[in-house]
Image 1: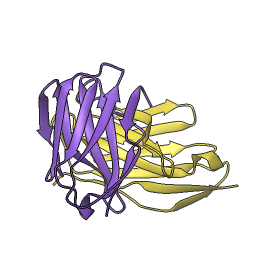
Image 2: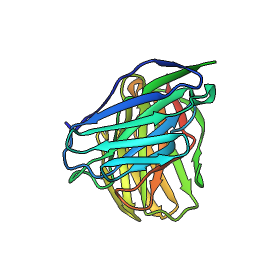
Image 3: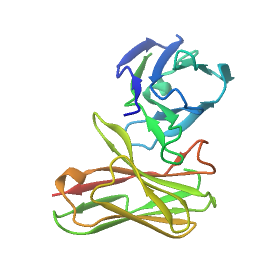
Image 4: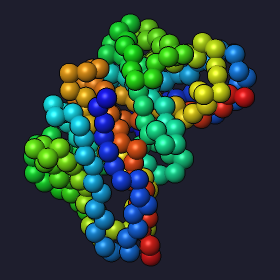
Length: 113
Length: 112
């Protein structure tokens, strides 16, 4: 069973701090990695995607990928109360069902004013 | 929501009745997916489609069937609803199999 693991949290950070969200995956063949944000009662919203080892930055968000360690992370700089949500890590399933994204159970982030 | 509409948004139904959820997209994306989301389980794939009349099972397909007769519509049917199918159902679309997926607003289904 291919898995994506995330710490469920809650992760609490003060406003203005850096929030670090981590994710590990079991499928060594996975090639595509995604971070989604989900507010309570809403649908998942894509924040970042990353395909290559290293860092990818978009505004206050940085995704980091290390395929050798099967590890992907999301950094949120200058965290705001509006960043409070559940963050879902998703990884494509290599060689399995076409286009299947395997989701972690999510990390709940709380940014305190 | 990237041109994705799910209907209905909320539904309460009785055990044993058939239920059909609809997903409609205006993006002309090839791939469409049905997920369910439950506390403690996260998002799990039920069925997906990679083209008109081309569908396949996901991780939790038992008790569900799907159909895709047009590019823009993907239907999920619960043949005989059970209480274990009480969940939030999300439709998603993507351009290619290994690219990002965009989600609809979700359907909250309660089976009593």
